[in-house]
Image (cartoon, rainbow, N blue to C red; front, top):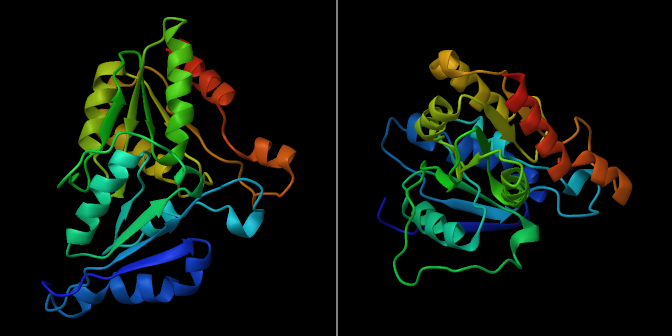
Length: 255
C-alpha cells in the first residue's frame, strides 16, 4: 500500500479498450480476490469523450462503462483546478482509479491553487446556485450547462448546476438536497442514454425524493447511435445549449 503508485496514461480511453481486461478483471478485483491482503493503488488516465471529427471509434464516453464495475473509482473533472485536486486524491487513493479527461479541455486555462491542493473523491460541487431547477452534469459539457444557466437567468429561471466530478462513488446527498429545494431535475450527459449516469441519478432521486418532484425528470444525452465523422451529423449527435434550454423549460412549466 505504501510502495509505488503507478500512473498509466492512455492516449485516449478509446484505445484503452484493449486494456479493459487488466483494468476490470485484475485491478478492480484484486482486493476482493485476495481477501483484503493486496490492494491496487493505480491511476489510469487519458482523453475521453467526443473531441471533434474523430468518428465512431474515437468519440466515446466511458464514464458509465467503468462506473459499472465494483472496485474502481471513476473521476471526470470539468476544469483545471478540479483536475489538479482530484488527480492528487486519485494518486493517494489505495484503490484503482479511472481518471477520464476530455481532450478538448487540455487547452483550457483557469485558476489553479498552488501547493498541496486535494479534492476528496466522491464529493460533488455546486458550480452555480439556483432555486428553480436542479441540473446534474459532469465533464466538459458543464460549459454548455453554465451557458444555458446564464441565458435562462435572463428569463427569470434560476438553474442550480451540480458538477458530480466523481461518478463512482456518486455524491447522491448533494443532488437529493438540491432537488428537495428546487423540486425539479434535469440530467445532462455527453454519453449514450442506455445505462447512463443520468439513468442512475434519476433512479436514486425517485427513490429518495419522489414526493418532492413537481415534474418528471428529463435526461439529455447524445443520440443513441455511434458518432459520425461529418460535422453536421456530429452536431446532431451531441446535446447542445438550445436542447438544454428546451428541456429546462419543459420541466419548469410542466409542474
